[in-house]
Length: 202
Image (cartoon, rainbow, N blue to C red):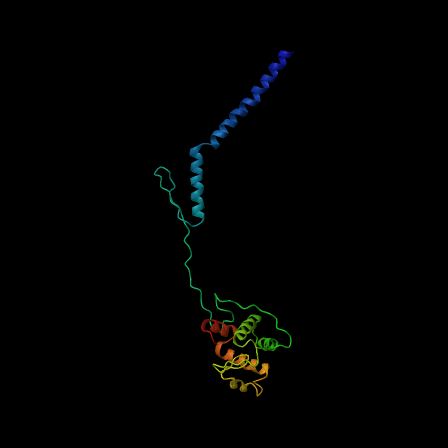
């Protein structure tokens, strides 16, 4: 009986393990065939190059010549300089941030006038930066060397009389005149700011 059991186990092993080992070794040989693997890799590389619109080159290894396809860099273009009426600060220059003005201040008056002209908060930010530089938003700011006066630094200050007789003391009158000057000469506050940054004056 023991002899029969040993023969049965040996027969089972021969019937199942032998064909399995043979199929595994042949599959491994097919997978690891260097010629087939290389040919498949070359085919895949050429298909990729063709699909990406690049020229297909011979990647044969017999002559040891290999070509690398490099996508060219796009042509550089110069950054356009914004015009005075563009409504935004010029590229490469500091862009003033918008800060809500204190109620009742000269800046609050200016904010209402800027909005009434249809200009954006960005334009108001440029105006704040411009007149901070010119006068610190002081209604009585006076430049002794040039004679410029007021929040917008009108030169001479008497020009602002066209906006009102109280031009020397009323911030609303000065601001109204200043916005009219900016619109007529530079288009927008950011246009005036860009000019001031480039030339030192507006």
